[in-house]
Image (cartoon, rainbow, N blue to C red):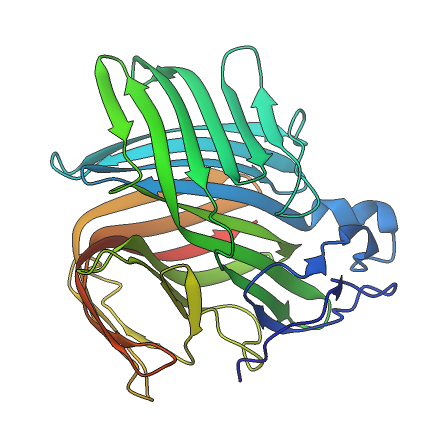
Length: 343
């Protein structure tokens, strides 16, 4: 378990097979989705390929997220903000038939993503030392939303990169970056949120792949700080694909990935607000997650159906780094979600 990919290569062979399977600290594989071989009629391949860029920013008072996704036969743009103190959230979404006007770059290390229908404008621009995010949404709950955010990627900052087979021909190529210092402003009506990189952290969930139509996963994540001021990030999950080569479970400490093995989740899917626990058989992870807010998102758009229970809460416990250091986690704000999708 936990085979590390260290050699650059294309993601897929000419026949559509994965060249390498496992995890990496940086994206080493070229995402050559033109080699996907799922249907005999090559023209149909695009309808099963999924691409998305999901950005989030955790602040002391709220969580703000922007996503652009291309599902092959439709694209989606959605923005939401969770207010921790008020324990409420607002979300707006658009579905674009056939993904018109949405372009997704080949790799996570290059290119820009944008959407503009004359009213809603969303753009993700890749820069040498980070990402520039901008959004204008004229009717965000009856108010104008305007945000400009800079997420820094310090030199040498590591990420969680996964290549996961899903059956014989399906796969998921994923990069998750935690703990990106965030600066900028989010304006909703008269409310203005200023982002300070000393207490605001951004994250990216970048995904490309061919999924089963009926899919399920659990994902838990957090970006913040430990008592001595170092940045700390958590990425944990399960639910799809063959993880015998590697799990997606990692601790990010001061910009360096510490690889974790299997993690057992315990939660009540009849009462998501009850405490969750994340523990590992090897004893390296002993965490409890206490939710304080539940965001439920449901969609039923003919072929696209999904239900997400995203719980925001606080992590407590310990995680042991690769060198044996015991990292104490206290009041680390993050989330844990269960997602069921037909797409």
